[in-house]
Image 1: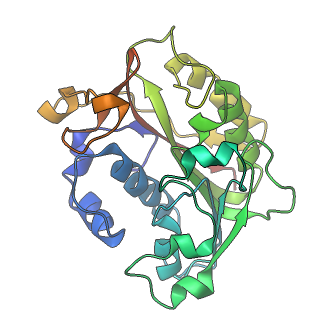
Image 2 (image 1 turned 45 degrees about the vertical axis):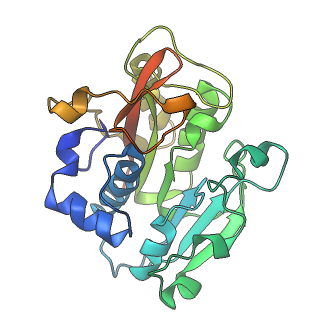
Length: 261
């Protein structure tokens, strides 16, 4: 399953999920962050083959293993993250990439040096000379751009980088509590269904379509658990597919966008 959807337990039980998790070097943990990484790669892999003549670009990559894995597939990949600044210091806790060397994985081979490149890029002002790509992605980054609109604008503007037939896969926070109240500005925002309803029209202006979003929540016991977030942080002791952020229960949402061929 590779279309736009909410995080749910049934994805964790598929052989394809487990295989991709191992390839990324991640342990099996009921954690939505790992689901985001696997789902992004599955969405992109649904479009490409491992030996195709393609190039990709990731935004706000932090220390995620996705660039290194694409390198192992022989795909030239540009990884980006924000430049050093006072603002960036809040991510200087294992979530910010300072340079290419931070993306090396214990399982990386000499393909890493050949196929991974890095540069800084502001997701709120994408550099005009970044290039064009067969795929782009971001994992839990667009909700940290300051406002709901800033994240939506990034989705639209990053699609301008896609070649015809290209694909974008992005994950972000989704509000399970309300389609009215939310956090709409600050260090983290939470998207509601109403915020996403207008996205197809925004994307059509840049020749893209959004895969219809599957909003089903899942009916497994794991889908009914909400991590209370000890001291406001993930402590690894709870099932972490859904969690409390302030007064709102949230989960991860995958958005899959396609450029018209």
